Image (cartoon, rainbow, N blue to C red; front, side, top):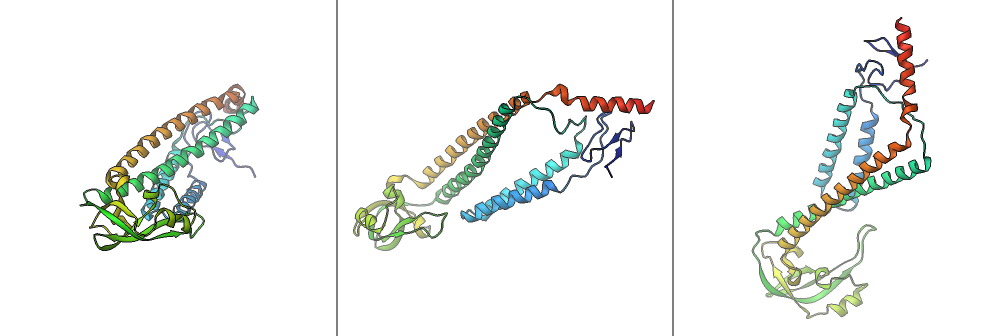
Length: 283
């Protein structure tokens, strides 16, 4: 049996179960948002949360992204039933099919770029922001790191690369430090690392006595960690927002261009036919 719903104002019989407004008089029809939108939100959260967990990002970032997804989904579900006015035909005859397909593919690619810029830009910004405030205001002084032994650690999983670090002494105390800021390029194996950073190598460093682990020792030539991280955070914010604005503008223009591929004159015929039928029925 076909779906049938009657407009409470003009009496028009509606057969579209997803209609939220009468196409003749514009009366808003009561309709509860479907569960598909929340299923889509759950899929988005699963993809984003899984990505962040796999790559070892802080859990508070997962909470932030989850809150953004929930707020966006709730807002969309709240606004959808309130949309009034005549509903356009679900399918409209198209022209310039090749142009339509090319523009649709470009919109999909730009949307992916927009999402990737938002995701990775946020991650890079938060990492730089965290390191900036980790070192900001911390007491430090210049010293020298005397290498005792360098270590080349192979990647332990598919999503993380190798790491290089060293044990040594600073002012007579045992310390550890990351060697990548000093080497600038990752060596291929332990032998190459030993050739570049052998026992007894002296490396100028900043020592942060109140911090723990490898964070206590930072290479001098890399600059003050707080200043470097602050500059990275600001650069990421500026370039990220600029990239989002540019990509959003391109998507908007492509959506406008895709409208050229639709024949609006033909798509308005079903609504006109319904209006004539409703007028005849009222007589």
